[in-house]
Image (cartoon, rainbow, N blue to C red; front, top):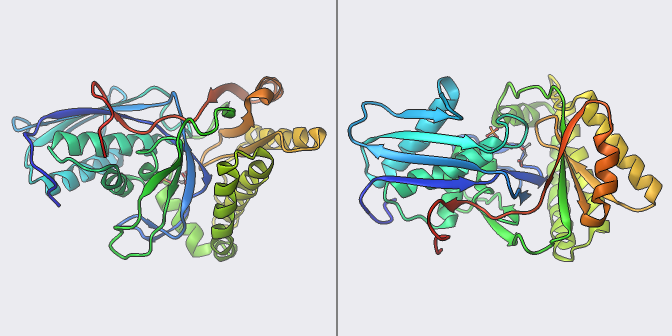
Length: 343
Ligand code: DP6
């Protein structure tokens, strides 16, 4: 779809990673990246991927440099596939030079594919002269990495699974912006020796769909859980939200562990963090914090500002914990050197 034609050139965008409160796990259409279930995330402030795309008729081939190293193999192919989608829509033939850098460790379990494909979708479409709405950017980013559909937006984000076979109704939007709940923080607990993800989540999730006996039950309970999580977020009610976030994380981990062969993303230190959060909640007699994790060993611990110091001291002391990082809800993708584009 050609929205408008402007001179082709270059564009730079920054996009954030996000942490899922309700996980995207399983697609009904792998080609169009159409999920079985809707998902909810918080956009992570401070952490950004910055991507520049420059279409250059003088280039014989696409040049892709990720974190100062020329990309090869599957990562390069995924970037080129996104460029091809954009070239197709914009009617552009030129090859592109792509440079992308994270201000956080890649493959650290901090969802660099979400921020990476969100920044790439925005930068490539703008450089090709397409003026896309945020909704269109979300759909485009989704084709690179499902979770990237949410990284276009700031604050708390809902990606509706949609029901259409063409995917037009499968995109994300902000449900509460980044100023909605200033007291809520995400303490990211980085563990030592976190294994680098060998298989992309988009592949791993399909073996869960095929083999986990618990997957259908999870899908059945998700609409109700999503509804309750959205209501707890709206009410800024940590007592209701935290148990639900852990219930969802446990459900995600259960379908991973009952996948054949099992998917085990946690290490001993990550499990110790989960155990310590449970213990602290028991000691306090109320939900002080909530753990969650994606397909990686690092753990995100949600808490309220007032509990942060106590939690940080206890979790930071656990054996195998490398460091902790305090992250707050942040804005979505932004063009560098320009005010936020109007929708
Ligand atoms: C567990 O959309 O990031 O983080 O790009 O193939 O890695 P790949 O898949 P991606 O899968 C995300 C899975 C998850 C849950 C979530 O973010 O909703």
